Length: 343
Ligand code: 5GP
Ligand code: MN
Image 1: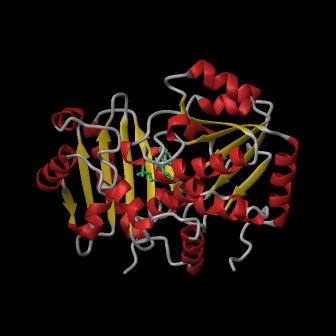
Image 2 (image 1 turned 30 degrees about the vertical axis):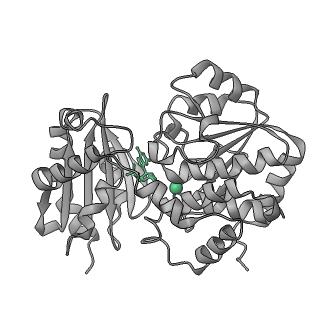
Image 3 (image 1 turned 60 degrees about the vertical axis):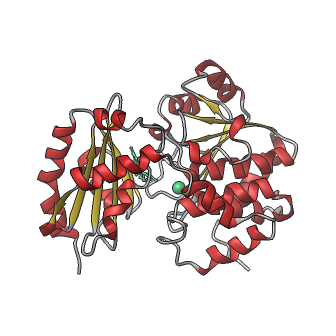
């Protein structure tokens, strides 16, 4: 048995909305990751199976290593189809917002969702939710939104309605948000849920291979170059910083998702507790932070780079040069280390 994490009144509210409405849009955050796509498609398959009209809209593209998931071909990208997306959001009776909790995380789509007349349901696991939804299902202690989707469906009495396709999507999100169950994954219930998903016929070993053994040669050469030539270690602050400029990424023929996971690597170095990766993008610097123990990646990201996230995994954006971003990082780091680092 799994415990009832989601409050009963929230389950009842969602059930009522689903009884009443069948024109549904699901949205998730910019540069969707495995949990964003997994939770979204898990819910998509369930709602479609229940006879609804459902559209999934994402702000922009997502990595190739997620494209094997059933339903990805139905996803509408806002940046390619802004008018269609705007119409669908405006016409939807019900809008599910998954794996994000502030509307700026879905970029231009955010104001469209805010203005939409449809009822909104947020399902998310990040701290500090914004109050924009009619029903807010926010549980930061749960390691993935995909797990929350599983819990939501089961609590509505519909475990039997979870198809193999939905189970694969949900498992993918649970796996990717925990680094294949290597962090944030000590709750025994995670493994109970995995058992339930396996009973739907999913092949978890195959899913691991699809996601993690699916990279290009270029990606590995870029990783080797970055670790060998670009990694900066701050021994006193037990911190590592990785940077990649536009030109460097071009040299290795960058594809969406190629740098995914790089920021985790330095945490494998003995003694390193905080890792940052600064990746130059077309119009800004994308920042990723990872930490182990109590060092708060999210506070560091929020206070210095207008970002946010979880205690051990956070991100942000910087509008300026890579050099300026690095300078701000280096200036800020010592004070945070002194304040938050514990043996
Ligand atoms: P990643 O480093 O994988 O891009 O992001 C790790 C986590 O940081 C995400 O799950 C998300 O919670 C958070 N995050 C990443 N980028 C941003 C951002 O620009 N703003 C905020 N608020 N959170 C972010
Ligand atoms: Mn997530």
